[in-house]
Amino acid sequence: MNATWRTHLANEAATKRLAAGLASACMGLASIRPLMIFLEGDLGAGKTTLVRALVKSRGYRGRVKSPTYTLIESYTLGGTQVHHLDLYRVADAEELAYLGIRELVSEPGLCLVEWPQRGVGLLPAPDLRVLLTYVPGGREADVAAFTPAGCAVLDALGQPTGPD
Image 1 (cartoon, rainbow, N blue to C red):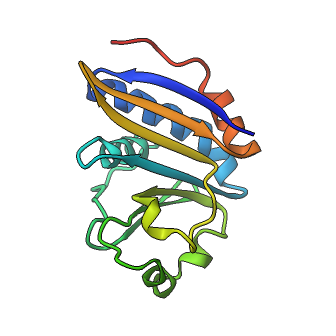
Image 2: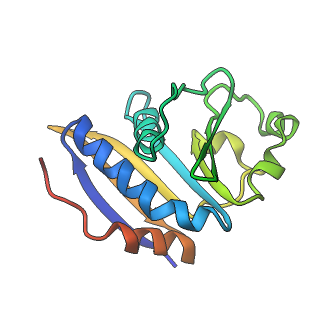
Image 3: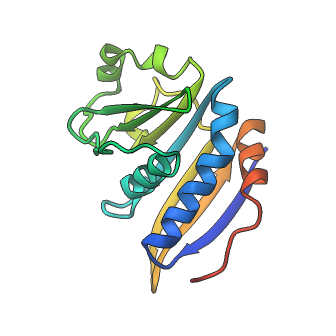
């Protein structure tokens, strides 16, 4: 099972629209089961910007910080837990065991993981992967689904919008 979806992100407003769409598509499902999204792309590609916009789109009024140094930032959005993990500074996946990662990813909620390749062996397989890449005139977002839950999210996203 593998479905993909691609859209051009010409600017921050387009990234915010994608984030809001992901939030709407994910939150109901994440309230009843764990939902794992891997966020991939080069440094500065917009992974944290996407998470920040996703959290803000659900009405969160506080500061949405990058978890580069804390590794995990968690939010409660409408009764659903959202965990933002940034594994860039993780040298060994076993470090995550001390943070309670197994419990975190086994409970209902949405886990958004930057640099997931650094958590191989401890992170479950993703439901979705969002790959952000630089292209002339902005970025491309390639969203791939790997599970029935991931496919449901893609279906809920609908057809991608064109360039802004």
